[in-house]
Length: 153
Image 1 (cartoon, one colour):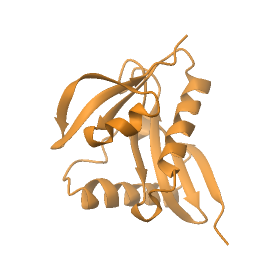
Image 2 (cartoon, rainbow, N blue to C red):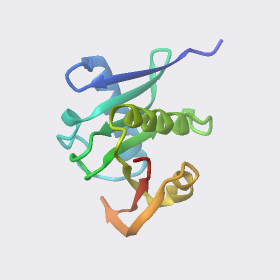
Image 3 (tube, rainbow, N blue to C red):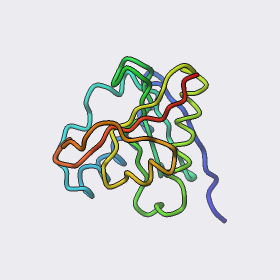
């Protein structure tokens, strides 16, 4: 029987030590080890974020962090969208992204949503109605592009 999926929202002040360790472990496995990218993941922005954790049973399988307007961009933003390698191809990344978008629409309804997308994922985000803005740039030696989802009224 498959484990039950659970979306859990946390502020930095409410995240448990175990959850925080799970998040740091997942981000490290994917962004640093798998992508062979030596960068400072613990960037002191986590304290300003809302954290979306996707658990399958007791295993953290996906994550994102969401920012209100004025922290990373003038608009709201989503970052560190990640799915554990063994759970990819099952639509969890889309579920995490859509849940993050809905959180922003509920909590910051008059703002667009910006992301710094890895350029190789351009079509993925375009399929979620994000539009590229500006030129490709290097962030931690990986090609990225700013993308915006227009949701403000």
